[in-house]
Amino acid sequence: MAISKVWISLLLALAVVLSAPAARAEEAAAAEEAAAAPEAVLTLHADNFDDAIAKHPFILVEFYAPWCGHCKSLAPEYEKAAQLLSKHDPAIVLAKVDANDEKNKPLAGKYEVQGFPTLKIFRNGGKNIQEYKGPREAEGIVEYLKKQVGPASKEIKAPEDATYLEDGKIHIVGVFTEFSGTEFTNFLEVAEKLRSDYDFGHTVHANHLPRGDAAVERPLVRLFKPFDELVVDSKDFDVSALEKFIEASSTPKVVTFDKNPDNHPYLLKFFQSNAPKAMLFLNFSTGPFESFKKAYYGAVEEFSGKDVKFLIGDIEASQGAFQYFGLKEDQAPLILIQDSDSKKFLKEQVEAGQIVAWLKDYFDGKLTPFRKSEPIPEANNEPVKVVVADNVHDVVFKSGKNVLIEFYAPWCGHCKKLAPILDEAAATLQSEEDVVIAKMDATANDVPSEFDVQGYPTLYFVTPSGKKVSYEGGRTADEIVDYIKKNKETAGQAATEKAAEPAATEPLKDEL
Image 1 (cartoon, one colour):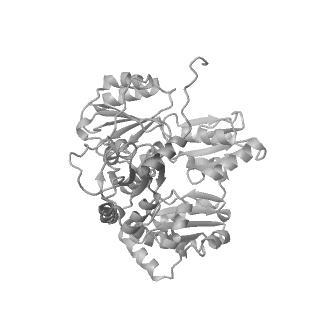
Image 2 (spheres, one colour):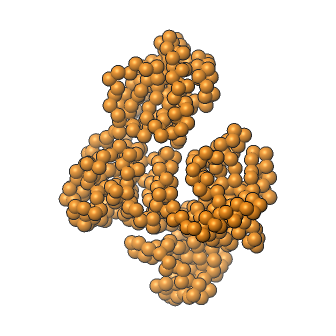
Image 3 (cartoon, helix red, strand yellow):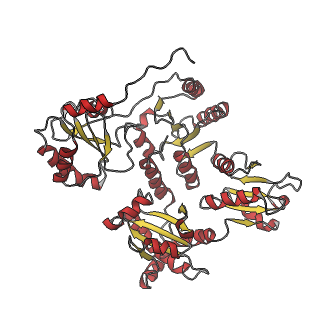
């Protein structure tokens, strides 16, 4: 399943809640001091962006919007970090781009900026671009970037060089007979590619490592982690295989969704994965939590060979997930599966003893998916028609009309600004019986798989013949009306388009 950027944005919002640093008086004073000094952050725009990226072998760029509250909070920390890093040898450059400025929006599109602030590391003239995944306060930014500009993997020459491997984080170490050859080259390639996510090291002395063994068969890659089996090895140095090994080994068998910020990186990895996801939500502090946990972990072991990832979530910390999936607290304890096609399967008021049997029914294909939908409106007389998940196909694809549909979020400022404009356009086109302007609350309804909704508002134009295009026209009522009139199909055109489609063929039933 292609994970929705909206969903990832939800998790990034969680990151702010879980990991926002406490305000401290000394930080405020430092921010004031930084503000008084000449600005160290470079200001980039469409005219100088490429030159700046080419000039600096390593540069961190913040894509921001002036109205963004998180951007405003980051600004003094980002400036302070830029001033401190300007003294580093070599200097580490921090820059910013106003992605809300019309002339810079192509840059935001090119680099897939989906929310603010977005920070990206550009290396080697932009040949290597990585998401910035470090802290958002000055000292943390400085320490994180210092590690990023050094070698992707550092040599472990003595036992004291390896003490950091027991700091409760994930680390990857290559153990070699010599620092040459295909295995070492591939290891460094992966280290460079994944360095923003993990710390890498390499050594010829396996006994220098925690729980190390001088007699270990080399070469191998050893991954240290603070959960499950603590240490896991691989001897496959194919680049793709090594990446998959790190990805699979760096997430707990069961990810915990609670208020502990240490679990946050695993939550992001869990929800960004394309694999089917099983999620048990219950109250951690009341009820028979331990019996549920024991049963769930037992189920995880029983189905360990299946392509599915597992999560256990405290309902007090999982309100964003409940909103996204259309769940209610009184349904808990509940278990939910979202498969790779975005279909969802739900068992509410589940009992601990039912978990294994329900999961088995899912894997055997015996469960019926559920769909999140608001009720179909009884009255729908406004110019812009309200559609929900349960009738969107009827309105958009089966009505025989030209439909402009908006997917919106009630809290979205741009959506609120667009609402009266769509009302005006719809009122203007009310006499056009073959035209419908519709809207759907994408936070309260499952968005059909035919539409790729990555942010709000997202608009699509669908014709009677089934042609579907992302609406990229103007945002005034006149521009919307003009677009629809120029691009709509008449009944005759629709019939012609459908007639031109290739005829469906019957499958060969006797050649299996």
